[in-house]
Structure formats: C-alpha cells, structure tokens
Length: 447
Image 1: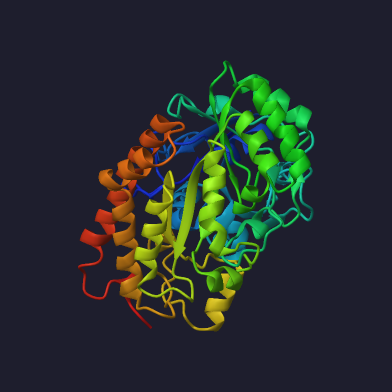
Image 2: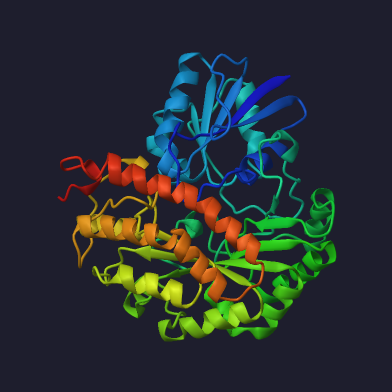
C-alpha cells in the first residue's frame, strides 16, 4: 500500500479577499484523489485549516499551486525532498511555468491529470519519474469518477456542496488564464452523470450548491438540461456566467425556476475602451444598468467582479465604479487589481512593454499592483483599490445595497457580505498598515 499526500498550500496568517469562514470544498484535489488505484492510500491536506506533518510516513507528495501561494508550495516541496520523499508539482502555476517549478520537484505535471496519472504512477513505482508530464489532449468529461469528498473531513462548509459540470471557456479575455489551463473548447459532462453525482451529495431539498464551472451558460441547450436536473433535486445554486445571460429572458427564467439565487458575473470595467482592449467586445457598457435590472427582476442576485488598472483607467475610475455598484444595488461586489498572471496574453503584452516591475509571486493575489499603469501612478492604483474595497464592505454600504435593492434571498446576501467583509478588511489592514507605510515597498516601487 503506497501512501500519498495531496496538499493545498497556504501561507500561515495570510488571508485573501475572497476567504470565507468555512473553506469551500477542494474539487481539484478530491477529483485527483479519485483517480488513484486502490493500492494507494490518499490523504488531503488544506493548510488553511490544518498543519502538515513533515514527518508523516508517505511515499509520494502531490502539491497543487496557485501563483499567489506558489512560494509556500515550493517551500513544502523542498522540505519533503530533503527527507527523500518524491514530490510532484501540478496545478495552475506549475502548468504555466513548469521549468521554474521543476527546480523544487522531482516531476511537474502540466495540465489535467485524467488519462495520464496511470502512466505517472507506473513510472513512480519503477523509480523512473520523468521531469515533466503533459496531457497532449483535453480529457473527455464522460465517465469522470466522483470526487473523493470523504477525504475532506469535517472542516468544510456544511452549507455548500460543489460540483463540476463543464470545463473550458470559449471567450478570449486577455487577462484570463482559463483558456490556457482548461482549454478554449467548451467540454460538457453527460447530464445523466451529473444527475447521478447530485443524487449522492444532495440529501434534502433546499441545499446550497456551488458550480465550479468557468461559464455555466456558454452552451444554452446544455444549460437548459442542467437546470432541469437542479430543479429536480431542489437545490439553491450559484455559478459563473457572463452578462450575456441578461439578453436571454428564457434562460434567466429557467435558471430562476431551477433554484439559481446568485450568478458570478465578470463586469471587469465600466469603460468600453477597456473591454474592447481585452477581447470583451460583446459587452456594451451603456446597457449594463439595464442588464443588471433584468437579472435582478428574475430574482437572481449578482456577484459582480470589477477590475482596476486597465489602460483606460485614471484615478476617477474608483469613484465611478463604487457609484455604479451602489446605484444598481449589486448584491455582492468584488474588486481586484489587474494582474498579469503567467501565461496570459496580458502578461506577454506588459512584458513586451516593459511595464511589469514586481515578480514576487506572493503579490499576484489581485490585491497588489505589480505593473505600471498607463493613466495613473502605481500608488494611485494601489490606494484607489484599497479605498474602493473599504467603501463597499462597510456595513452602511452593504445595508444600503440590500435594503434599497431587490429583497430576494436577503439573509443569504447579508450573511455573504459580512462573511467576506472580515477577510476583505484584513487584507486592507495588512497592505495599508504593514506595507504601504514602508519606504519604497517592493510592490509599489516604480521602474
């Protein structure tokens, strides 16, 4: 029996603006765990809630790594390798920068594990791990095993179940790494398999379900079938989509009837020139307020994402965006700073223009400025973001949006805002009190 440890790394004491009281289920690692044969005993560690035992009796360690926590992932990998344990790095950042990751691992897995893990384990057992493994084709989602949710333990949210029904996104947003990581082709799971998985995790009507898909409505006929299944199970669900859903009243109606209570929508910017510049020409900013009202009219709340730092942004963008959020009663607004993640078209463009000045991966958390903006200083972008974030998570701002706006699912959105507020305020304090006062801090140093 081989012992495997799968790790989701987190820096101790460091929160991110989207952290909640209870960590969301880790679908990636639970799905990976389901691919191991029965001759392997698998354990999952999420450092956000439990410590790693570096003296544990394990034969193989697998570590997934987002860019903002990759330094911690490398530190974990180095410690296990010092003890002679084989380490494989995978996930978003290692897939984008495999050569960098290889300096801290025996092997790097690039892309999706389905269809390739069997070969990796065969080489591991023979003592012949190769430096890199890469899936040459996007995996077929048909026949996916159910994630090993039993390995998550009791620390995860009792309120949310999570499921994946599609992968990939047909859009080409310049700042997004999804097309690189999950592909540009939209892949779907058979509806009957989604139904079967839900039957194993939904125990009663009214349970909350989170869809990990990048864009749940990208294929309309599939979305209709999916909504029928959600309605059958009686779930209340949240998922990712684009503002284009507001142009399809029938899709909105079916979503509401199926139990949709909130949609995460990337508005990104209120300036047309910004959206046109990052391949989001399908959005007409003049129609945004009307589209918001259309979605809310169907009793579906909006988790709206806005990004500061596009080339068209000047210091007026912060107040303009906050006013839009408050005026349109966006139920859950999320602000972030444009970040040139490795492997994205944005990163390549800004590199060519010589505008990236900070390559400390821990600052790539969408709360730090790591490049020089065009129409404002680095300091103006950083401090403007902090001001806007603090404004929208203030209790007065939250209550104004929810009390004056549509009253659907009021207590859900009230709780969600105040849960997120804790993490958001901690991020604001950390940057403002511990980083901004320093003379020429690294992440504010202009080239």
